[in-house]
Image (cartoon, rainbow, N blue to C red; front, side, top):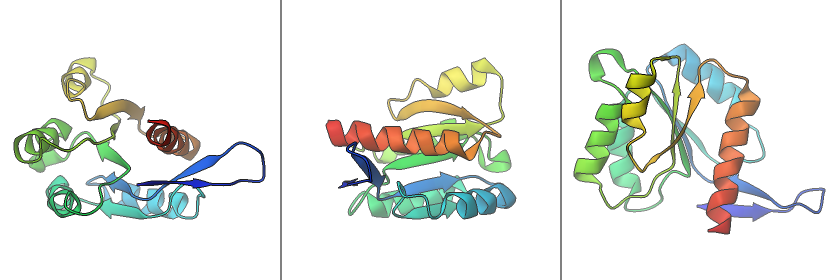
Length: 148
């Protein structure tokens, strides 16, 4: 899932093979995809505009290669919330170990806190945020996985 990659300094940097962005806002997805494509820490970037499509892809990926990091929007309108996505994972794919970050403008701590009870949730990223914050999260996850 992660590869060591030598840099110009003596510090090693790590690459994430699979970064998934899941957001129902196509404009946000396109901007993030264009912005994140080309960063050294990301080998492969996939986007999904519904959590149903992301979940179906996750079922396929669980047989081959899991995403290194999933950046998941909290609210999907009529489709549901990140909680609903996590319930699907816990019901149908309980054996998976995932690193999911909630990327959301939802500021109600009650809504977010209930999502954090899932072992897959590693943190919350406020929306909007500087792209450097997203890169830092991705790099941190790559380093964690490499050292474990």
